[in-house]
Length: 279
Image (cartoon, rainbow, N blue to C red; front, side, top):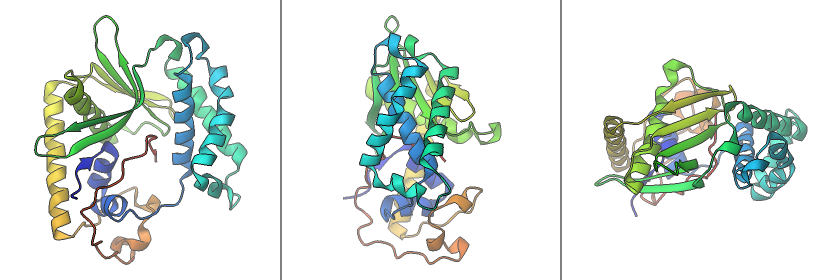
């Protein structure tokens, strides 16, 4: 079965480094747990549960009270969480305290008691004609009762990128907007990224021209992926995030040994996890 789907995170991987994309999607090499990713999953779980409560109960105190149970649930879901504390450089207390600080920061960006979500951690799939199946998880989808306008909100537990590096974030925004417009027949009125680590917002009001450009970019990415699969050659591309890459031992740029191209490279990659893994 050929690779048929593409998500914003995997598209970003490919643009950053084709070899990174290959190791994550085709080889599916294991990666060590990331404190930032695990913390992001915890914060997302709390905010998702918060929006399941009545509007009047969506206060910061309530959100903070959800942290202990959400933390224990994450431990049960992913045993790698405990590995973060083995060398003593990070403690459970500091990990939870950092998550609580991000939740506190969230309340400086918006008032959840005034918002109504039509979908939480919503899987959106849309087939591009002659291209990939677009797949992504949306943290929150809102539909205005009177106008029917759509708004997509996505939480990021990292810091907002500097203006020179915001093009990747805008690509993700438009990727989501394109998928939603294909499934619902309407272009979202707004797509919003909430950076809890700053805290700050990054918003876009997508236009038809924006979505046309985004679809064209996706088609170019998809063409390149298919060509590299056929050639069994995904080159490494060095960049500023390389020092944090989990695959340096298998990367020629760092003197590593390139893994043999897998025989089952045409198999379907797994779905992305619902919770984003922020750097």
